[in-house]
Image (cartoon, rainbow, N blue to C red; front, side, top):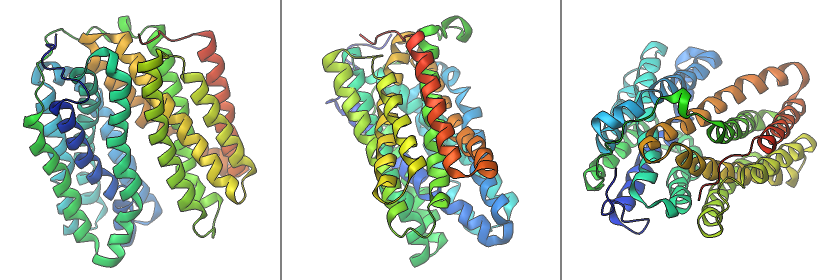
Length: 382
């Protein structure tokens, strides 16, 4: 088990260094998320090639996340986090060598391995570095370290490309995660010696419910982020404002949920309100038009932020101290897989019936998810 001294809490230096390493890591990820598809498209790969770069990145991310709990037990959290940060960042400058699709896909796959390692190790450290009564607030601060780079840099990457060129972005995106890896030795954490339990026996009702909530919310937001620019064309600053609102809403939702989980003991009780708010936001997007686009996106983000935090703390409670790595892996897989499914599945709906129908389908899915969650309540995270 992790010693009490290793768990200095959310005000301790180890936790703060982990937040710093996470911020650097996600800075490199956020900068390149829209830039790599643009690089491939301008190299002549077209829309399919551009989409393939993100698909390969997320596919290798999810595949890697399956193995990370095993690696955490055998190598330790710091080694896995450091290796993931280096693998995410170090290949990025090599993208400048060529925009040919095979090279870009190969480097994207390698970066996906790094991202899979870093995301699971980072969110597992949330539980390892703080006492259980601080898990909610710690998850909220971790969400801030993950979300702020995306809030600031998703759009900045494209802007920097237009002003300074692709190579400058590739270099900065490569250096940032490596700098994060340099902070890892300062993250003092006792190695967990408890073996991770077998998955099927520990994925109980209390674990399945938060995973299902995460998956449905991730599908909805993945579809919103992917198709909102297409659903509201030539809208000036409206769509960027809506995307900013959903990212900011997610940050705020995670922080609010963290306080409610720790100080009010509401762990496991925020899944349904979060899904309800996200469903209402998607319903607003069906109507659309003017400020409603921004309001709906903010509601989706805030609701999903609540679900992100609450589901993570419930999974930590369900798996126990010996299974934080497994809980982290399942949570991250639900997040990343849902994003991909949302882009593909809702895209198929939009292709046949239009974007309002796709947003409406997401709202219906969230309502169905609420019904399942209400009939199969998750374990409270005490």
